Amino acid sequence: MGIFSSIEQLGSRFTEPVNLALGMFDGVHLGHQQVLQASQNHACEINGNAVAFTFPTHPASFLRPEHAPPLLMNAEQKAKMLHSYGMNHVILRSFDHELAQVEADEFALFMKERIPSVAGFSVGKNFRFGKGRIGDASFLKHVAGKMGIEVEIVDFKSMDGTVVSSSIIREKLRAGDITKVNHMLGRSYRIDGIVSSGKKMGRQIGFPTMNVEWNPEASPAFGVYAGMVKHLEEGIKAPAVANYGIRPTVENDASVPKLEIHILNEFNDEKWGYNSEVEMALEHFIRPEKKFDSIDELKKQIEIDRNKANALQQMS
Image (cartoon, rainbow, N blue to C red):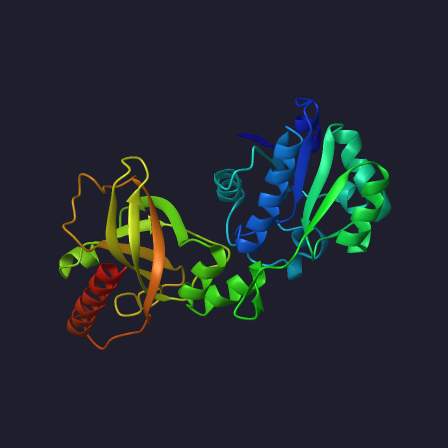
């Protein structure tokens, strides 16, 4: 897979036909996946490449910074995810003044001049483009069609009467509805980070944890989650329970949330030591974070959380 920071980088290296999947693709949810599949289908028909054209940060962060939404994933995570869903290459092009000034009726030409082999665009039904976002998917189909570029408009993906979208997923994530989040993503919501040293409070009360460095823009509700943790270097997996929050029982003035992961089976320091790169899949929300009156109360609740996580793991 190639990851390119400009349109020209890809356009100068490939002469075979290209279908461009256009969009922000934050979260790479089920709706996005339909657009990616459409791109791949057309690329297969023309013996070409399926390429995702997206942005490392939201265009609103350039146009209206105060209204920019928190992202579900960073640029590196998004590029890897787009590749995992079958895209041959990814263009992560910063949204800047040049792109912001491209008129809607000039957008297809703008892309064609930089990627001469572009043969198709795949977009979602709500796709907007051009200066002032005045262009929509139907207009792109009209303008690009005159240039011999095929445009496929992919319909919305709905679940239980709700259109799947990044904004809805952010809302559900903040509310702790991890089940709905996972359904809309089509996979478990995952956290990845590096194990760092902590105060060893968990170890002192009989529940050793891994402290994972993680600072997302769009974060889940504070609370306790059950799922699977994976050691990305060793490839080993283990059922785990995780707490994400400010740990009010043991820290009075914490302002930065922390992620702590407790492995349900026997914890091995050698396997899961400091500087290990791990990934935690959040599969169930057990309870919101709360402050307990004593460490003993906290210990009792952690044991309850642990037992519930074990039961959920056995059911899945």
